[in-house]
Image (tube, rainbow, N blue to C red; front, side):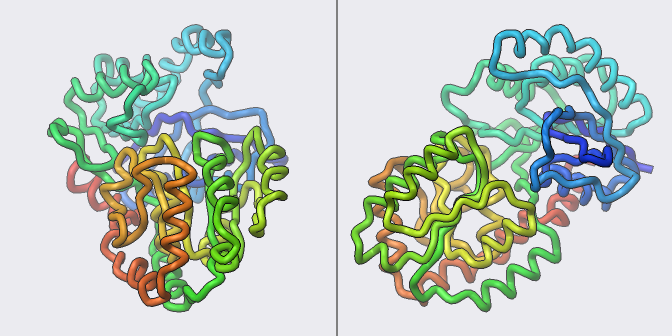
Length: 374
């Protein structure tokens, strides 16, 4: 019997019938952990909001959701609530860990400033920390720097994105899992059938905001010459954000078909990948976005920022394009370059990635947990 308690900041919601659903990427990852754990508890927060299409239920009654008080936010009062609610959160975590063999804490997150010290100094369970953010982030928030410092100066394993100079021995490079066997097989079929003859379709998946590169994307597509624009089919934008109305208005003045899809389910996002030829993600801050490998699996050439660990997996000109300078001009130049490539060249970029893509499967992730953590 192998029992796991996961502690995270993953958003959960109640559906109309009372079912608890959570952010699809995390819930799917946890569902696959049942291949190596017999019982899983997930401690996280519930938000009083309508569940987005990307939120899904757990796949088994062997996964038990445990709610903790919702904390965090932009206001000073929201941040202070972390202090006032910390004792109750620690008690809930402590109770859950009493009949668990292992824990996984997913950092960085607001509650990490007190949960990480608790797990290090006051808990004897076996376990590990998953640091999903940028391990070498410059000008990181103080709370994130504190959590990383704590994790570097303790003994339990920490899984991180990428491969870094002077990486502590207990900090292990782990790919962020995002693909199932079925999705791997569907990707192989998709790539065989994908035609890179113009017009080419592009996509973006994420929060529609400046920090994720939406302004740069729209400006870059707008700045292309008319001859280059004729080689473009559509630009698909998947996601939501506070500036959605602004982006929609701006898109109307751009002589490219731009489709705003809003929030979509995992299956619907995969349909966007299947019809797209490249994913554009000029983000200023990331760990390693799962959408990069999900899109590559379905034959989308990554056009991504060379930040954090992204350049450890995407090699410029070989299996994608890296933005060394996150700017409109840099993205425009790469778009122009890609659209000038011959079909055979684009096929070569996406065809020789089987080993890389396989390393981002849930099966590969679980096998490495068994080897290095459990």
